Image (cartoon, rainbow over all chains, first blue to last red; front, side, top):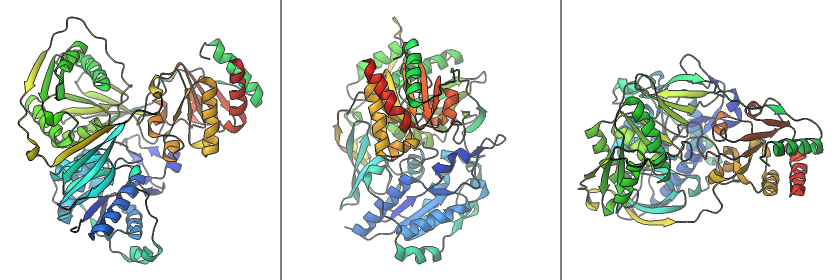
Length: 267
Length: 312
């Protein structure tokens, strides 16, 4: 089998255990994430793991990239400690506030700059945004095919891969010529942990930071200003519910609740 | 055609407001009779592309054909169902057309400027956000199955079916579908359940989850979940209730150890009666419930299940 070189897109996401602390900036209507630690998007861990398995079988390289604030350095070093060969961080204030189209545009530009590759892997969706849009959009900007919901990848000899794509009830088997973008779901593998032996490599690794000047991009298509979608309004939905609290010992509240539900005819 | 019919209903309302035409795009093999159904539900026009190549969802082929249609006919608005197909196809087309796409909208409307108002739960708060795509066209949005009410068939509706020739051949494409395997769903879908019991992060572990399932059994209820129990594999993905999961409309919904983030609440807001059990008196779910019990679910759920069982 010839070498298969992989690029993996990573996204740092705010730690879900601290989500209640996230604040929405009422003026820019974007999220204020300062002070909330980030972790590597869980599905991206599966993408990285799959890339490493492919590297082990075929002898290629694994490069990780991320478009994120400078603090994403931690997540990229973590990826190197897990086994990635190198990392690039795309970070600039002009990238901030991007929607999925503007994000995919920047990531695609970085991938073009990295040169030839065989597979671009990413998690099917992120924990925070959850749109699942970036993988297919990057593929369109690169002019290559994509497959989402990938739960199995087999690299074939003739520059092709065979993948299983999970459906709501069932799956598809698809064959595609590389290069391809594959968005993976968690069923695909069990990710390995950081390798102690790689920690010092990870700490010493040079992670270039590319800004808008380092990429061949149209500055009108990046960041908040380059995003076709915008938040126009934030509002509290009107929720009309009884808000009746039932208090007492467990047996008492059980009886009271049942009584009220029966009165309403729902139990 | 499930969610597609729901989108036709939604699109019809918007088309009426904008006093414009609603078109549906139908791709497949041997699907011509579905085109008549789309007209009956509200489409003025159906663009029909048929080919053996299109029998199953083929991301490359579908995106090429629909992309060309969109470039030619320049719709103002383009809606798709948020299914494994829609979530794969919509972004590909959005990038092809360099336009905005909002996923998993909970409601869609247009303002007097003809802008599509795409409402989603705002991440990081108990608020909703209205997203717009002011300049780029088409304005694209996806909606999950069951969020919009399906339209009624209107008798005597007429529409035009426009057949699109498909020149694509397998040799032109880089992707080949080798097989499609369908599996039966394990349980009755929660979207149609009359009673739903859902558990959240606070359930803590599989022992706790067993109590949730026991409560559900006592009421003949379906079991739902928020994202953390699905991630922890106490529940499966098809039990997820919320913006990125299912919308349920039971007569009774009981949320146990669920804090009540907007992403989840949007999936249960049409329940007739909502009950919340949570040990945190400040949990947002209480403001969105009819009845609330502040308690550790481990103390309340067993006697509650017991008392319900005795009723039957």
